[in-house]
Image (tube, rainbow, N blue to C red; front, top):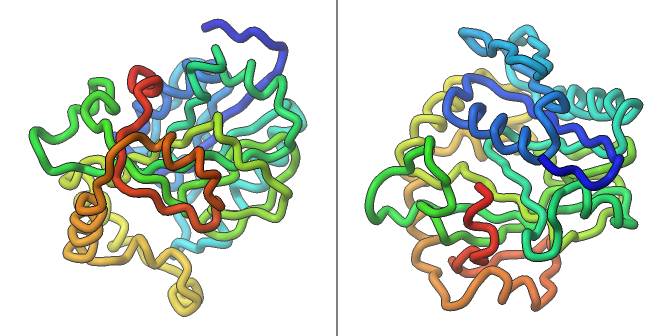
Length: 273
């Protein structure tokens, strides 16, 4: 790894039963920020996540039910604590993968060393299963198998920050002033493989939720049925367009309303995930 700046950058995630995505997350962010700067909050997995060499794992006791505000509080507290030791902290889900634009930056450290913003909002790309060919082989490079996606506002997350951050439930928005960073891309693999999506959704639907969250519409995306998920994938595939996601990005979309067609991922990213 070549980190050309003295910046210290940490990456943190909170996970539950993430046997598929967590190893990919560790490999990716170990390359991005260094293995000894990774922090995993294991939210009661059974069996629990085992601590690897140099990686910090905190085991969180499982609560009576999942509370969206509680999740925000836990991540915010950890981010605030890590910022006492680090210049920047990446707070990302276990199926989210940040890549600085390879044609302009040799590393995340190089990008953040020149960044004038305090909190960066990423270009959020949903990788959509085309339902053509084989399921994803998670041991192989992902974007070579899934080379199309769609930019969505909900994935344009303020995930990279150098100041204490307080997110809204779901981590899609925060109270900080943010920069929509066109050179920081976040690839979300939730929808990359339909079989994996349905297996994870079955697990999520079994998790007891705070009744107040359900009443207020928080976390309901994790409770929708398989039929609705399949219809969503079908609808995204039907919106296929020509060109790349960069062609959409140069129109300077509002990240709060971003919704591109189903387009090619710029080729420069393909080898980096």
